[in-house]
Image 1 (cartoon, one colour):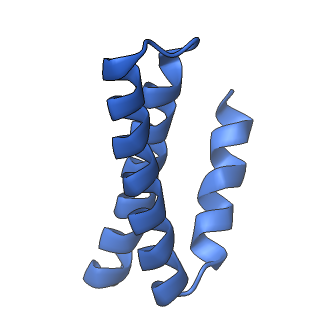
Image 2: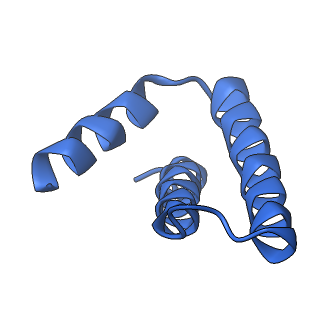
Length: 70
């Protein structure tokens, strides 16, 4: 599982700032829609919400690293 996370993190590093901002916005919108869908009619696999939150956190971490210059 750690290797899959590593590959995603490396992929996020390759994105430029605008693409990273767009990806964060798209993923946050998808998370909101998934949460709403789950509230109305329970989804088959609720762990998808957890995965989406973590991916957003990874993206925001990369964005913050760029702001701080790390």
